[in-house]
Image (cartoon, rainbow, N blue to C red; front, side, top):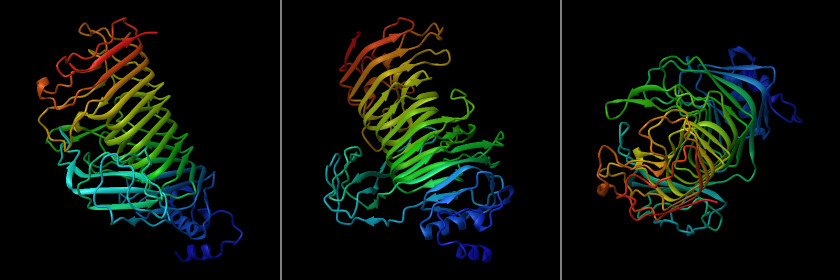
Length: 501
């Protein structure tokens, strides 16, 4: 440490960037460079300088749990990093945490909020990401093998200095009581993290829900991550799950572009209901975020390889967008509001979501028996419109049925909110490639499945009806006609219009 302090003091005043070597990093892939990396970023933050890694170095990160705080630009270039999760002392600690220098502000003068409220009612020092919660009301009370007691009602939105709420992040709940509200000012300057190849040596821990987080924890708004590669080696027949190599929490205005990431193997464990379940593990996650764009991304594993869980999941996000992504799954768990997916290909796990607002899927291909699965563990709810345009549904295996929108609901479970079917479904220029289906029970595609679960009667299902389905120019390889649903009772008041050019 003495040597590191001396090196920091000796840095030339005219230096334009900081290097890890100046703080003792060896970069031979053997010696542990974590302390040097932490010290380099500390010095960079103090001096307001970017950090640059050496292209010809391989930095090893092993047992330590110290976190490198990033507050300035970083160029990892062509450098390699080895993250050894077999020997780590603290599997929850990230390697890097990206933070703002701006301080959070508690909002004490707002006591209630209403759904789709336009103004906050108070002024803010800057455009901010606002987090509100009511700890006395539980929502997202999960159903099924991973059942739980829910989570306190909360959401995020963007408000400007005058307190006006951005329409892309509308308030989705009524708050009769507010137990906490915080504003996180959004940085005006973009912080860029570029390059680098990071290889995780996978943990060998017991297969249970102890999520590992040894990667990047990004908590600052206005961040750009580009041209980064993450690889995974050494996965065995067991292991603990990962919450994400790239994790975004409580931030807005984020772009992730041209990155190559790696899904993790699917392991089995015992869920909260006491029965075996497949255990989720992700390489990229977003929680409590607004205006996040993932673009031009790929994964290292075949998107239709069922041995690997998937790549992306989110919770409590708004204005979530993907463009030109080729990944195994898009998965939005708890309450995404406003989703736009364009020019993407989704593999064997497809598009999974619940939420609010408008979901626009344009020029995308899905390799599953359903184009959109409204997650049944959260009530298969979408409070808003779904638009599917210029898309292809192409299952990669023989199926008994194909649907555009699927879900189910027991009709007896309290999820903490009223469940909704999509208000309107608009379909235009859809190709259903069912040429690989030979199952004799297959009768053609439908807009909705029956939404039954375990024999639930139609009259028990809790949904307000879908008002309208418009389907224009739907091409089905088998020449079978697109139907509304086999559940004629649930969709009896739905108006469906099917037209062709």
